[in-house]
Image (cartoon, rainbow, N blue to C red; front, side):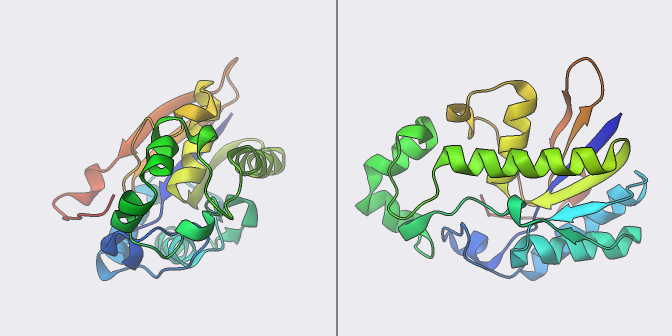
Length: 208
């Protein structure tokens, strides 16, 4: 049986500013680093033996903080990068709401129909995330591991476990440094924890 703890990166500067990220790098804030540290404290008790992470700065830094806490060096997997969002990247969400409102509405209600210039297609995104997931499942087999990544990436994994169509990708919330958990090895894969933020214990964040 393979248990995978799914960790969204801590709060980034662009999270705080309300700016679309995608493949664009943005460092963690001081709050984001503290969030990552608290996630690591929880995972220290889990016996995690491997950490896989996106190569983007906000996820990599989160993974390094978690890894230092539990004594495991993170392994970069580029397939766990966030979806590329083309011309939306680096722009405030409020600007997109004003200038590209139809696409923004579609992106959240029926994302397969959204047309974002220069963006990665959802089908391509889903394929690379799930191919990367299968790679580590073959490699690790059993035990407890962690993936530190992005809201979109982790939502693809959770949607796959639940058998959801990709158009339902945004129907659940994943907070910064939240913990979710999926288990493989039963007759069916299972989601056993979703968006746990109990370890934040009073930390305030206005980030989406």
